Length: 258
Image (tube, rainbow, N blue to C red):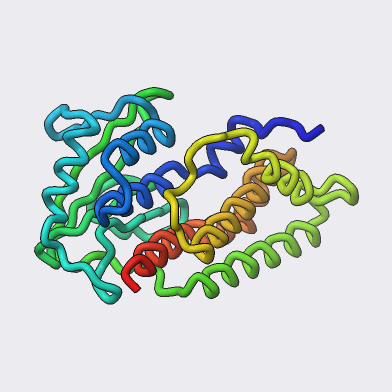
């Protein structure tokens, strides 16, 4: 019998802002209804949402997103209506607002204006969203195809695995990497939540699944007895995970327009 996925591991593996970005984009493109995007927000991030700027709730937040994206340029070569921006330890700041973590960049009809939505999880039931407007060119996302991003994940995982093993931190028969795969295998049963909207391209879905697997390896390893000493080896893996997730969200939206 497979052990349940630990709460801390689930929080790292399942990326609610990544999934929310896709549901929001699908709604803006008219592929799902308002009820569906609201249900997805509730299921992925919590029942209660607060917009810091005016104290409104989720309906008001969605209304503002719809308003600013109205008449925004749409095309394979245009910026997506919703961009996922992820940052973490060791990353240079990509945005003049927000904090380390996850943000959604919302397009505007003016190509030199963007809106940045950043969630702050107050508790298990309340998400507070900050809304900032920035002017100027949007910070460029990693320029990789899904295949290239997947290769980055593989290479980062292989390098980290080799370094950790060479340092003598992975005992035979008790590898954290093996335990991570068992944890990933239990994800579907553990969550039972709406992961992604219908019709997400398989290449994007597979890339996000690979990112989840690598995130599991990192988190299980970091929680081992020698985890703290392995951060220099593991940080590049987390950077590759963030890159893969951003690329997958971008690719999925562009494929809608082909």
